[in-house]
Length: 326
Image (cartoon, rainbow, N blue to C red; front, top):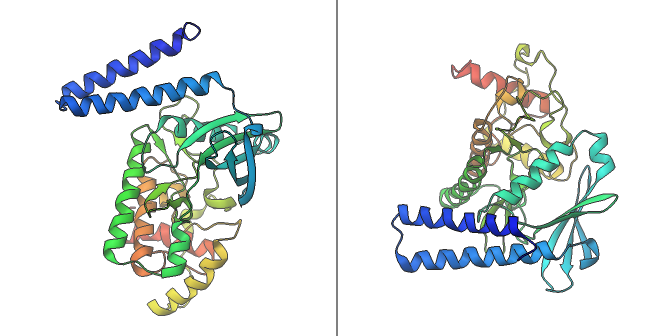
């Protein structure tokens, strides 16, 4: 410990702050001891990681479970502990070319800062000359999109359960002054026991950073590469597409959802109107997305679903006008 005076002082400060909070909250002595022991365990693990510099050679690479714009996600097994993780491998040159370095930094910082049972955990991060690696918790239960594809709709009790856990996940990142900006069924993962965890923070933003004075970004493209709307979005008129019955709408969405789940284009169905209109936005946009997901859980398709993304955007924007908010 003599070689880490800064770490010792920070560790001591964290313990002191936690003790004060527990005393102020009048937590029973036995429970205080248990909480402090848990903190000590985490601090010991942190110090161990500081002493050992992790690298890709510490892991056995297994099957690929996902691909994205900057790289891939694959299963891996740590050679020492034999624990299985998800390794997110991001190509540095591609991130630089697309101007996404700050987004990746925000993702890494958020995962390191937020300690929540409803957020996918980050265990290690390291880099080499070509790639940045994030070693994350592996969740074998699939995602909410797959569950909805299998069940079409959920019962009210099931929807309440998953929405409640998503609320806790969103609240935990908002408390740290981040917004997710990409809340959708694909990013709600399920663990082995069926509990939900929020993932994919590649579009998250810190609200209190001088690097991000506002959120009116011309390069922000919601979803997996969805094209931004033209600047005259607010003047778009309602589509003249024929109205469908609820059953027809459900059937059409069921067919398209299976294509969207494996598409690189993405869908605007869960995006808040202020994001589409580039008017500046805050944490509220995450709650809008959650409301759209809850509607889909109960009805079977998102509230503004249309045959093409532009028609969906029109519906979202005109909805605000129709209910008197614009």
